[in-house]
Length: 497
Ligand SMILES: *Cc1c(COP(=O)(O)O)cnc(C)c1O
Image (cartoon, rainbow, N blue to C red; front, side, top):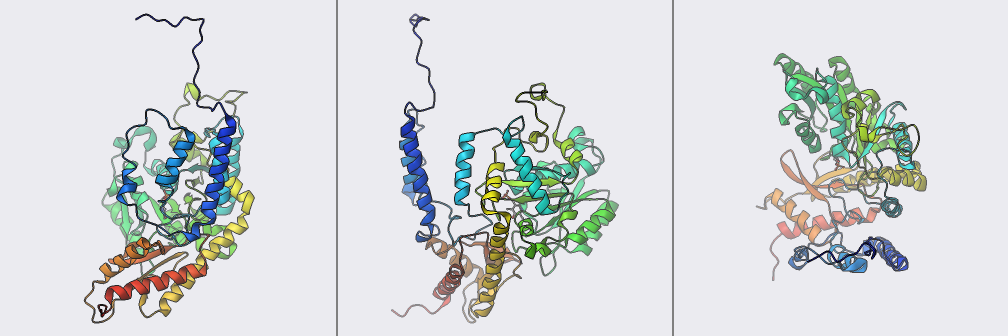
């Protein structure tokens, strides 16, 4: 076989752009309309539905060597994916802590995909949008303008980024330069037993290991016990460990508890420790002055992590780390400038902002855009009012549960989280944990509502975490009656027929 292509016959060059843009536009318009209709009618559908085996089988298809075109791919999405969301856009979804998303966020994410910039730095608008957003967030969270910040994928990475700076600063040698083997002592962070497990994962990733995260007992309000904390720190020092920081939480994931941040800040000052606050959802209470007392002491932190895809209702995913001392933040993440990333005096590479100096990522989605647009679209005051509405709804739900003899509130209602369970009637042999697990799974399977479950002091509880701007009072009433109804079915006398 010889190469028969002669150089003067130019081969057809491929591109992923369409030959007919009008066709793509038509598909795009149709899909956008459909998705907005899907959001508009979300209340009419079950809060969740299980995936039958046929639905799961759709994801075991052979590798598509030949494409089926945009409309084919969209059809497959429509039939195979769209019927099975986790449910967080639904008005009666309160599982884990997941935001609801916004219609404006759909537009913002569509623009982000079309605009498609890599937002690490350079002379273009995206890094400036992010800098603007970070200035707003610093103002809201009470951090100084001189603080540094970075938008990341979520609270987990936001905690990781902050704790790396904390580790480096307090390790004794700059651990990011020297490596952990250079350290003679085990480094230790302190947090309450209720700390989010992303902090465990951060301790693992940062080389401290699980042994480097000491979990301190909580009091009856699920706040870290500051006396035990102090004692543990001094015991650890005596034992030759090196305490480096304390993590306080605003809004623990189980019960919404808020640690005594002013006291933790005080302990950090006295003990010379880094003060990090995980405010994944709770920090957003700062958006409403009426709720500001919940975040008292937050602004004393050396670093703060929070999410915008939870209690700011934005589409997944966007979170934020703020670090009081910019120099420390940059020193942790910025190695020597790479020749291929060196800024220039003019042109695309001329920019004083470079977000790869403040976190582990180089290629970065332009996630600042949806925050910037949401603040402009709704205004921060409206977002703050919705946050307050969620807090009120949780308080009312707590009251409704306390008013029902068949239900039991299992933790004080703090912020937006309500933990409760069905009381198994006296004389019933049913195991309360089993009954409540069953109730939870049944109301999910029936599509009524989607709370989640957790353990409070060893007991299984049904947990409502309300970061939902679509929920109404009636939705919580429906939840209460569904739980009672299922509880009676599971524990009542057998049906007479
Ligand atoms: C959700 C949550 C996290 C983790 O945030 P992601 O955005 O899921 O990565 C960390 N801490 C707390 C308290 C949380 O609620």
